[in-house]
Image 1 (cartoon, helix red, strand yellow):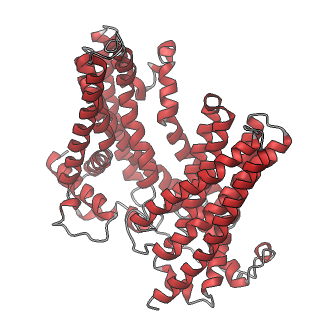
Image 2 (image 1 turned 90 degrees about the horizontal axis):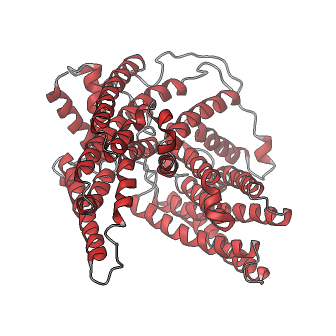
Image 3 (image 1 turned 60 degrees about the vertical axis):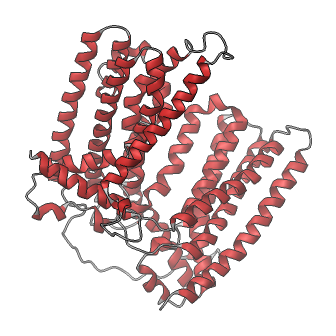
Length: 538
């Protein structure tokens, strides 16, 4: 393997990652160079280091409680073994959201066919680029822990944790490469077989693969597992992804030789992952089969189910297209995966946050998912918007079609999640019905609010990483959406559990605020689509 080629290609891939979310790809821009990301790593490390020094000064100050510095020892001893899991988890969680959603025209590795590269070199470069892209999280953690580790005399453990965290970043990058290959094959499941069953099978397979890895390396679950690690050493010794953590635990226990053995085993496992990832990349080099099959298909007659909702045939066709695209298009995977991951975390950790916290968590999942789906409803059309607007559709027609395509899945999923949470916490039937109504209300209001931004600030450019909405608008939508969400969820939860003895008052506040925002959002969303039609040059 030629390391110079790997380094050069990794630099190109990192630069591509940095420029993919920008409106310009000017190579002279400092923000589009790999050195910019290295500067971000350094700045975050120093910022966290400064915060760590402030903590050390606080516990050492004359007014601090006695034994404050000693209290840092168990904290450092517990957190340091967690760092390798953070490295793998950050790359997997972020990579599943952004790397695997690359659109098909950018996701193939066949562009490297003309370069003098071996598959191993390509995989190594791509892995290094992914690891480097998500390294700021590790830099932040290492910077915060450095002064604490020095104070408690754990410098050796800190250095080993830093080394293992870097190895974990590469491991996470290799897992992303392997999952890319697996999902490419999963995406071709049932190729040649049409119908709704095919769409469901593809969606289920992709969701299972992504959810399994997301949950296995989720920091919340991983930290809870780490707390039980010492009592299950025989099990974790056989799991390669925990060998870095085991090495740090053994070093803290004074077993230096055993710690070195775990480190060596971790490095050997890294080499094995590289070989496996290279073999998978060779086998599944392109995302889809090049074979084309033509078959006679009956032209669609209509959508009677959507017609019941009052949609015209053209509006129903657009809504049906969007619903199918939700499970067909890989760039829509985050919209599917995020609510599932968050609600599974609620079922795993729900007992620790109580029923009131669980209701707020459910409200956040329902609202955030609805906002995410609705704000991307127009931008996902990209260049296909020209074809869409060639149809006999006016602004009001397109708004009704998009709103229906968003409201149908979000209200259904929110109702199911609300019922599941109510049954989990054994709520009374009136409280369960109220919880379902609260979740559905939040989903409706946030869906309408997201369409306000979708009609005005959508991004139709083709990018390796789908953007759909302009970054500043997405931040504004998220911030304002969370304020609206809490404005409905908090009084709604207080009304459900009669916290202050005036449930109807809080219920009126939630309904009144939600209704007012919903009406305003529907109006501004509709006018936003009018503006979209006026601004388009065709």
